[in-house]
Length: 184
Image 1: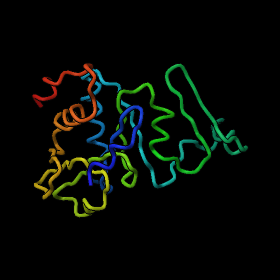
Image 2: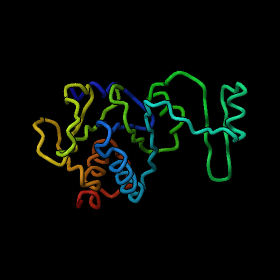
Image 3: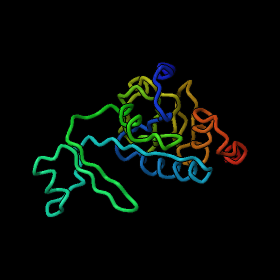
Image 4: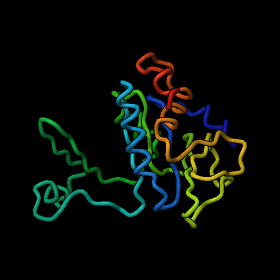
């Protein structure tokens, strides 16, 4: 457990945050992204959704195009681009290579069964948990209590510390200040 991910190369590097629903993945990721962005790192975010989300709604032109049979539908403005692609679930590594080349790092929520490295999140008051041995490429644990593990143990309530760990582990560029993040 822990080093198998080294063979996986994604451009840019990517890291998954995994936990059961309600643990606080989104909140921690939001805070870590902000810390990294403030340190000058271009961060991409990838969210896995097991519930078959829909960003297209009846009455919208984009929805009508998709319903008419468009395999790919892109909506674009001067500030955003969104795409609806009818396909099977692509591997996160493929999504990262295809859509995140303009980022220094990609942080993903979910993808526990992918081959990408991940940080497992646990909360003391959250009874639903998975076992660490269920995650092949876990490189650290973020929790609000003492977890028995040989992996680095991060404070889930310290996003600056999690950001510093990520910087030291994945980024060798000089865009961030190690001193600033190490102080966290």
